[in-house]
Length: 251
Image: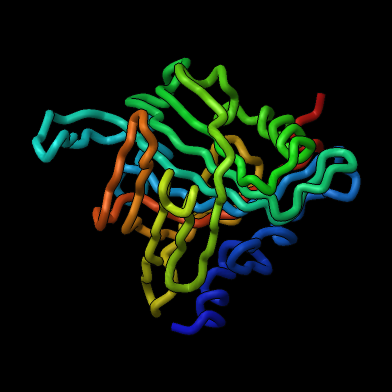
């Protein structure tokens, strides 16, 4: 299937989609009069099966955990990588277009708990202090990104974020893959069009373009603490575009 056909198949998600910025105009955010706005693409993969049941039940499935090649018993966890690329956005006079960052961690066994397990936020080195301050002030509107949401939360050392997606799948790396990596393969359904999910809430964002399902071939965090890696396991993965403005959070 060529890229043009792929993009046409995604049109059910938004009025004028495209890979790497599909819902910029289709989501209809009134950015012209908003104090701040943010529209960004997200590549996500997690350790849950496709499609992550946490979105429906708030709890990850039981998984047979492995340590040094040996099963250690069934555990419940949702280990995740999220690679972000801002399509357009601003906070006051600070433009956020093109900013890239990464959010990863383990949400633990129950999203309903007051605090989830651990998370790390990493900025691309090209993100200036003004840009990151502006972005953090916006993301604070969503509970998912707040430090107090996590038992352990940190902002890691800057590392390059590489981000790409096309009709075949998607690939993103943090620190050229030395720190983290996502590799996804597009799931095709009827008429070789991508399998999609629409009208599903995503971490408090008031709008999203829907989810293009892309099971993972690589889901990895290769840091010193809490490393994890899944290869060719077909765990959950997708591409979506999310959008919000100050007008969505009155008062």
